[in-house]
Length: 354
Image (tube, rainbow, N blue to C red; front, side, top):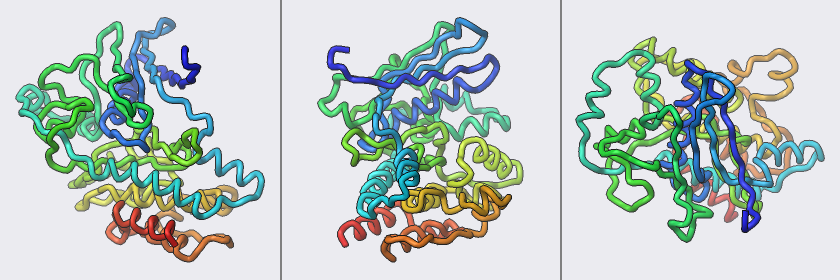
């Protein structure tokens, strides 16, 4: 390339008859939806027929972050038996929380209603119910399709993520939340916003937080687990469905307790991410999740039981009491006892100013 920039090309092989293509494109669409400096910007993507098999191949064209992710930082410090300074941890954590806030406070674009898309949802199966929880694109030609990146349209494309579908037909539902808000998507153009449609990442962990080349800016990635945050659980079938989804998409050591044992008569919400953020902050300080210690990994202990009982301890460390209290506030078994993302950011800012 003329400017010698390097990029990452992610290749996903999708066997014939599986939902792998749809799942990969859900991630692509999530990148397009959440435009924020702390959320990874996808440059392009394509789906092609696998020349060596019956399935397809999904390519994701992404920025390359040479510093790796926060798990790499944790591993390096653990190997050298060093601690990351508290202020540095808090700066990375604050940027991560700002990305999460963009998801938790998302407001759907407003446009005209689409009768075609409503008709498409007239009948539902258990598989349909699961699918509707995730954002997904329309259409798939045999020769593949591409989502073009919008490079050159804005002076700040280096920081603001943008993905647009090459052609968007009137009435397309690209995300499940679009229909409920009343219509089509405004691909990167300013416009009116409708009702709040909070989304949860559902797999927040150090390995999904890249570090920009400046060494300061955290970049949230891997949105394959992303879905609408507020999900009422009305019966046992829905509860088991949510447990299955969490088991497949949410890393156990960072998974909220309500996702291990989903109850009926309750509603899941964005507080699942707050728990995970508490685990992330703990891991940045102590090199492992609060529920991924020697007892659970080497002595046959159960991570699930440790999570369900919030059984963890702060190792001896130089970190402040306020820092530890912030972690503890997020690791409450009852979601209603956890702070929301605004309160987490306020507490983080206070610690940075102290």
